[in-house]
Amino acid sequence: MKLQTRLAVLVCKASGALLRRMGRGGTNLPGRLALKIDKNILGELSRGVKVTVVTGTNGKTTTSRMIEQAFADAGLKYFSNKSGANLLTGIIAVFAQHCTLSGKCPYTHALIECDEAAFRRTSEFLPVECLVVNNIFRDQLDRYGEITHTLNAIREGITHVPDATLCLNADCSLTASLAEKIPNKVVWFGVNVPIYENTAHELSDAPYCIHCKTEYQYDYITYGHLGGFRCPKCGYHRHDPDVAVTKVVKTGADSSDIVLDMFGHVHEVHVNLPGGYNIYNAAAAAAVSHVVGIDEETAVSALGQFECGFGRAEQFTLGKAQARMMLVKNPAGFNQVINLIAHDEGSYKLAFLLNDRFADGTDISWIWDVDFETLAAQQERFTRIFVSGVRADDMALRLKYAGFAVDRLEVFRDYDELLRAVGADDMPAFLMPTYTAMFDLRGEISKHTDVKAFYE
Image 1 (cartoon, rainbow, N blue to C red):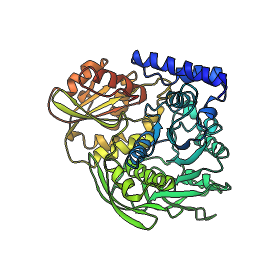
Image 2: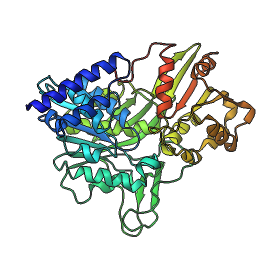
Image 3: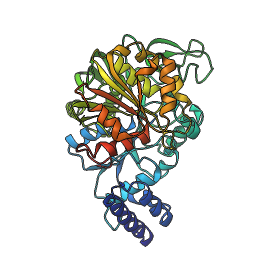
Image 4: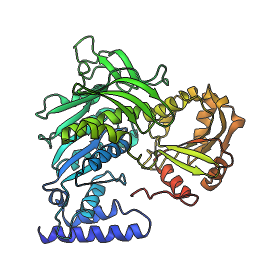
């Protein structure tokens, strides 16, 4: 290993350790410093490692946690970027953290969550064995631009990894198009049936055929633009998945039970998180397990045992109440949380937290495409309704126009006061923060209860 790389590793490790001692995680800055010293450091540190990459708009972190459980149960010697630092610099930092000072990586496998826009560049350095693309939805228009920009960034990244096996969502017409005119082997996953009887009203991010612009016809829709799509003009259509959810037995506030067909082998599967989107994540994780050689029984067992990623349906005890935190960051993801809450018959407190910092997306107009009206129609179920975050007033206005009674909206500027209100009685709560609001809220929660740091 050249001296330049060794110096970069040393600087990365030292700065990361210092930042973690300061309670800041040490995820991106160390990688940025290392990259200044050695432009090819990621290629050097990942040499000989079998890398699985998870990308796409929604579900990267949770899918990665499902896969990680399967890796652990199978006895693979692996590491992952559990902190969620999924840009190039964060990925460099996690590789440096798990390498020796000489730059040698003692692990056989790496599980890397990668930002969909960052994959274009990150893929130039990583020896990717398996690539998962969960879905492509409209997200952070100020950063990603049009949805086709995200699609093209992933498409370009795939050209850098011709030997990787791709695990693609058969139900997403955008994601499925990535399989065209490439040498890669493809494993398809999907859901063969509707997940809910009734779903939140959603605007489709891909209503027209990606090839001929004709409006798609659907045999069924799971959510958003996902489902049994087909173009009546050019014939572009959903692939039959190799890993398919053939029946949704039950969806609840804590978990789901499904029937999963893996390459012709049928399994009854318990998914240890709620929500239709996590049913897709489970199918993706099962597809990855097949690609890396993990037996089906181990893969199925992992789906019922994994721990959720930070902010992704995490549960906390706050005062007298049990609270579940559901990260929301775009219309498709938020509508799936609304589906989850709307199909549960219990009573809850609700907390909506909206920020507009860079990591959230500075354009908050997307909240007007979220179907809050579905919750407003059931508002008698919700004992208290809290609003907070940097853009709390904008969220309160959106809820007003959705039909929530204005005198029931309680706006909190201080997270400590919000958490005290959440924990004032034993009624359970759903906390729905955007990305930076989630970090701020978890920081405040750590003062009230024991929680792992986000990078642990």
